[in-house]
Length: 402
Image (cartoon, rainbow, N blue to C red; front, side, top):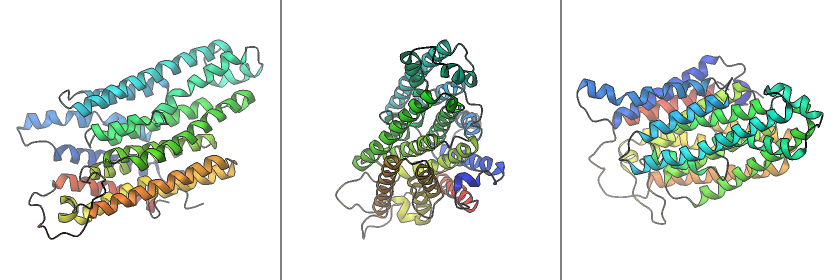
């Protein structure tokens, strides 16, 4: 039990999560500086404003308790604003557009579901709705449709299939300093929303059975579709985004198994922010997957140790042995086995095998084939390498805190 990362958070000081979030912010600042041309002081300060806007997202990663639909919508709106600020960047604008419409529709339908559920129960207080609905004074069609809609926003925020495309689009289109905290904050909000919705639902057996079946189906589809998508993708950035969707499916598995405590979500969010920071920064230096063996890139030829630390973050995102991410996968597997979900456990094992295999393949491609060519003369920015070291330091702290 001492090797369970989700259990370790209950005995680890809260400063551990705050320290991880601070390292993620520091890495984001370094990545921002690495892509900022040297100009005047005022111009340089203006370029740091988007980085400062990430602070609320980092705080929400560490404090998922009390998450409401309005707070999750505010986080999504901030993410869209950060992505939409550079209208000349087509990929970034496309990511902002897709995130806006998928989140906007999800929040609207969930709000409608909550309104219908309040109408059926006669109260808008979640804890009072389940005993009232247990009296079965309303038809199944009304509360059943309403309950399904209230779960939609949480599933979309977690990146469950078929809505997992927004994660790959954000990791591919957004700047390296923006995408990790945006993804970690939105996924943490989705898990907290589902946890608050499922709180006390055991008092309404019919509703609990319906919600469990819907979430089990969403988790299974997310794991299988994520594994299939990961195996067919070629761009490293999109592979990192699909690995993030598998992390969201892990949280869905936890909700299915009854693990909805906010302390576990906070530590998961800290790990996601650090792992995505390292893996997302590394993906900018990795070649597109192809059948031909390419020579290693500039990062691995000039700075192999920094590249290896980036690969450690990628492997942790996939749950490879020896990384803090492995504890998340093992914990989810134990929870599913304890609550007797063999089908979901099989899908989890499949997704883990595919994720680790793809990550190892990325590591093989990163070092490339032997070559006699001279090393590239252009060095990788020091700030980008420092960001990789920050992310790896945070991941090692999480690993040692088990």
